[in-house]
Amino acid sequence: MMSLMARQETRTTQSTTARTSPSPTRSPEPAVSTATRAWTARLVVAGIVLSALNLRPAITSLGALLEEVRDGLGMSGSVAGLLTSVPPLCFALFGVMAPRLARRFGAGAVVCAGMTAITAGLLIRPYAGGTAGFLAASALALMGIAVSNVLMPVIVKRWFPGRVGSMTGLYSMALALGTATAAAVTVPMTDALGGSWQTGLAVWAGLAAAAVLPWLPSVRKRSEGTAEEGTGRAVHARVEQPPALRITRSRTAWALAVFFGLQATAAYITMGWMAQIFRDAGVPASTAGLLLAVTMVMGVPLAFVIPRVATRLPHQGPIVLAIGVCGLAGYAGLYFAPAHGAWAWAVLLGVANCAFPLALTMVGMRARTGAGVAQLSAFAQSTGYLISIPGPLLVGVLYQHSGGWGLPIALMAGLMIPQMVVGVLAGRNRTVEDEAAR
Image (cartoon, rainbow, N blue to C red; front, top):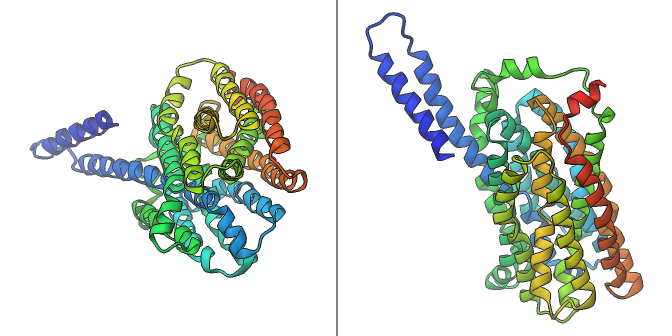
């Protein structure tokens, strides 16, 4: 990324030197445009990183304090399971709107609105009063997360078409870092701030507010074209968009959607319930939060490495299988010895959670054009999150009615098998444009 910026700065210097030449054939406009593009590219990178940091704290901070929230709001186990199902439901409902909103307002402006919604939702929900208000404010924050989830691969594809792997890795690494940080520090931060779970949840609104700032120029520049289209890509984006592309005709799109849905099921069960599994096994609350953080922080290095490796392979199936085996081993550990081998199971499940950056990378690889990526991203994520909705809810119901974690963990392990199968199918070297055309 630094080399990219260096080349941009070199071109800026060369263009500026050209402006001082007396030759009448030289125009100052390219130099200004190059400088603007270099600055905007840096702003886009900052926006991507800050936005990614905010795409999971709304969920993992709640997972760390779920018991306190349940007691404070009087939730049953089934209602708490419903609460953990709200994220995929919102992602499915609102994510499908993202491409249409991006075409009308620009992807950068939509992400800016998304970060604003996250800020408002996180600030309101602890003080909304009652379960219904808590769910409504959570839905507002999750709406912002949903549209940003879908549009991040689109922004990466348009701004960095030759660096999809490295930029997806940077985005995924920031996402994992935000996820892990929220899981690790929410409980001790809540204690330091007086012990109120409301304060412990509301404080994350500050991080979301910071993510609004890099996207504000996208809103101001809308009259001249969206920020990511400010380099002259607006015309190309309109030309390359295939109006007749029917994404549902693509077997790869369906395989990727199911893979996305099953990995999301595992991820939201983990984020919503893993800390509680450890706490019920006798692990202290603060340690349980750290174990969840370990699971999430595994994605920081791996989320940067896996996309880069995946883009160098013609078939991503081997990575899918390796991730799945780690997940099966982690679930087996949770079933037989949840407390004694807790740190090992947290690490293994952290590797299994890296199916998410792999899925994002495959979204960018399975379509040739930016428009194709937008359609595939919306389809795979919306359909995938619909598939994932019953999982966390079913875990809550099984836990409440069985009185233990044996059946829920068996369900998690059972879902890993089809995830591996469809992941191998989604990893084949094909594009949705070709399959949809046929």
